Image (tube, rainbow, N blue to C red; front, side):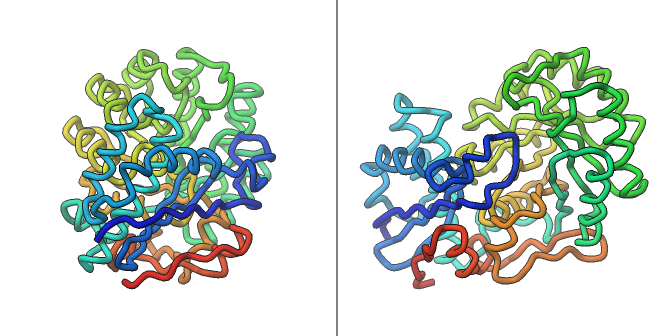
Length: 381
């Protein structure tokens, strides 16, 4: 079974807020792209890339000589070949992002052909349920409380709040948002705080971060994410040592090699690769295993699509060191892509599908709605 072609399905019109310019909701400036791999035997696989269609299309054109005609049931080998042959073309950038979507789609194909969920093909399932945390932007206290209460009504029992005014106004504003969040959900729901240090021109350093971490500890915050600029590894090492709450970071890093120093030097408590950027399931699973060897938890970053969430669910099923999965909510690119709506049980846990490949059926109407009328290629399996 060989790879015959690649199709791109750009998602636009409902791009979630996230610190970027609203122009990225336009088709020509979209931020999320689905990738479809089609084989010569009619089996197709689906992946997701956190990158604009224009960049993904250019990247696919670069890797096509090594992709088209390759054996479709060797996802890790094919993806590594693409990485190896594009080192000079853009390691860590748009090409790596595009390979992420290709890799996810190839694992989806392998799962369909073998009749197994990807998590079992990655080595086995450690769990069949996981706690999703509802991920949402911060806002003024009354709005923040309303959003969290709506999330509770949808079944979430953990939330991550971030960006927005946090770290941009003053300490009193930061604390008032956290107080409102804790009051809204009560003492038994987990809250994570994401400062958004990857935002453009992040103004704060170590002293702000450690003082803010001490404030967050007063409200039983589960972890403090991206408190510093994303390349400040020495700052993170010091912050992890002195902060009274666990520290999380690394969502912007790509390829497994970039994570080695962060893991070996103990820069974080929770490491957060993004499967739609880091190099795909192949790379992220290896990163998670190496982190586990160093007693670091793996929490997938997932400001994402339904396809990316499906990949994350397979990853956390196969990871010994996973307790949560990120679930941006509410988000049309997530909810609208599933045939069957995702629901949490009474414990706030989400079932991880054990159907072949990514394990989900995709909603044709939802895909058409967000791609300007495009449709997935029918798969023979």
